[in-house]
Length: 394
Image (tube, rainbow, N blue to C red; front, side, top):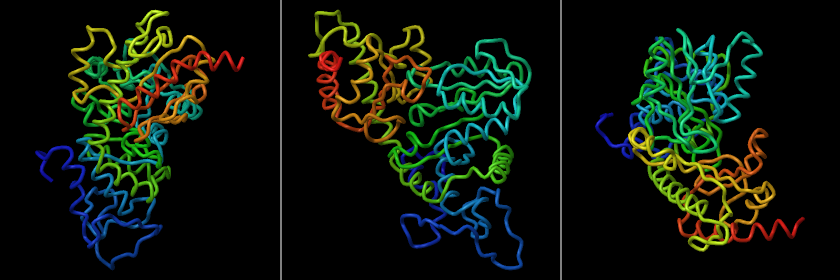
């Protein structure tokens, strides 16, 4: 496929060569094993050529539908992509593959840190350092950007130059900013990770993890490890992911626009003094709002270059009262009180319920495809009424 095609076209046609049958939509194979074609030389199952009918041998190696979705993911990410059973499975696979002696990491999704703790049971000598500590040869720098749960961005060019200066590796968790928002490879990433459960899947109905690398031999090493760790994605999940990728650009572009507009709207409310109101919302109802577009002005130049597709659709707000943060999600009519993010529907949660280390006043919002003004009105009525609701319950 021509690399000159635009993203929306690549998402629809990157797997065209796999259309060996008459079906327009791909079929789901539930078979665990595949008939051998005869006494001929088989292509190796780690050769990422979806056009070969002799490729599939056993479903722990490859399946037709998973191979197709990896072809589309590769076209999306501009690298060789491999799928896993979940984002955490991809996280652990990256740790096994890189086998770091020292890992530089800070904050971010708490599940990644728990996965590292599990990995350290087999590698207790692994040393954890901060991403702003001095690096040494062989270090791995793990950068999540935008950051979960705040939606704040980190400067990938800076960390790429810093880790590459000592011969280390930069892995970027870009879950909060899939294409077309951000391309970490353009800023020096060596490996890109996505929890495909989120925006790539986009419908809250599948678990998936993705790693992408530029070198084919590195992809083959990842495939080998996946085959014998057994953490591949199922056929149904692969089918659902392929369906979702077709509309990724449309969904993410709209969600990013909605998320950015809402974050900036809520920020103005947070700047409104108690006793006053802004756009119909009482001042003092929000203490703080985090979002990449609200970071320091001196950072906005590199943020806009790194994230040309706009700000993330997931961000956080801080209330004054943890009781209000507990009640607010259940006062909303269009936001579903639930964990996770990236789906077409808007979600909201008191983050402490999923991450015990989070401040009890912190609320994370994942913005969906609803009409922006409808979402504002829903937040308006909840923010104006939550204080009285809490007092009535006490």
